[in-house]
Structures are given as structure tokens and as C-alpha cells.
Length: 265
Image (cartoon, rainbow, N blue to C red; front, side, top):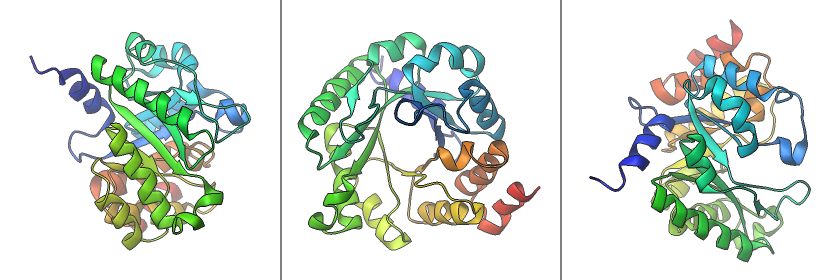
């Protein structure tokens, strides 16, 4: 039997089988931000994004006991294993791969701030989780960013994000989520120099859905494997419609104008 069959089956529940792309909605913000607008009721929120056709939802393991029974058969489940209540760069390992396997999750996510003073702990946590993921056939999504205050010293936004993405691949990630670099050309460099699929993060909250859809369209043109967008989905006026608009671009190659028809209706 193929020792990676479990990993392949789980990835098949996170990545769209037809397009080969993914639309992930993270709502693991509650640990550091609290019950902010859009995720006050996480079960309801996951229901809305599932209605819109999201491929996966990503959340802290403790929410699994209320979300998975309601929506675990409607979309892929990604457990976030790391977080921090007050110190963004100091990501603590709060759960285990074994718990994710036990609960039926389809992937785990670990966040790393490259260049942080806590880098040694972060990379050690990643290595331990990656080893467990190989043992259990669990895909790992690396959420890798570069410390903002150190980007210029590393050569600017593009070079620092290329570095962060490459670290994820070198550590054994199956996919990496990282920030958009601002243009198709520069994000193409990130994708081209990362040996594993790159998923674009949603970035800061925007009030204009066209801005969001344009960024997603450009990222897909640059070769992104999909997106992982939180606040710009569940703080939108209609989260399900926003997911449908994003899916039209990601999975069906729609233009921004075509995708806008979903959020206007």
C-alpha cells in the first residue's frame, strides 16, 4: 500500500479535484483577537462559507468539537496548531497532529514568522509537527510570513516573502500560505522559487470587494495554488456570496467583472 495514501486522500478534501486549486477560509483569529465581528458564532460562519463553496475552513483545534459535527462533511477541515494570545511573533504549539488525526481533520497549519527572535522555537515546533505529519499521512500547511520590521534589511517585501515561502518548503510543508507581494511579476517570483504550492493570504480588511477580487485574480495569474482569506470573507456583507465570487476566479478563471456579479446580487 502507498504509505502516502492518507495524505493524498486528505489533500483531496482540501484541494478542488477539478481545478487543482483551493479556497480556504481561516477563522483562527479568536485566540489573538477574541470574538470579533464575523466569528462570534464560528459554527454559523463555517456554515456560510460552506454554502458559498469554500474548499476548507481553518480554525483552532478546540473549535473542532462544535464545528466538525455540524460541517465536517461539507468542506475540508484544517486545524491550526499554533497561535498566541498577545505576542504575534511568539507562536506557541498549542495542539498536536495526533489530535487532528483523532478528530478527522484533513490538514494542519503551523504559523512561522521568519526573522523573529522566537525563530528557534518556531522552527523546532515545525520540525516536530512535520515529522508527525509524515508518520500519520497528514498534510501540513505552513503559514509563513517575514517579520515586517526586518523586511527592508532582507531586501524588501518580495525578497523577504520569497525567503519565508522557501523556508516552508525546506522544512517539509505540503503548501505554504503567505502574503501577496503587490504585483503579478513579483508574486510569480515567489511561486517560481518555492517548490511547493503557494496560497495567497487575504491581507488587511478591505471595504471594496473589487480590490479583493482584483488581488486574487492577479495572484492566480501569477501561479498561486489558491487563497486563504479570513476577514475579507467573514466580515463581508454576504460571506457566502464573497466565497462564490472568489471561487469563480480561482476554480473557473472568471474575470473580476464576472466575479463581481456574485457580490452585487
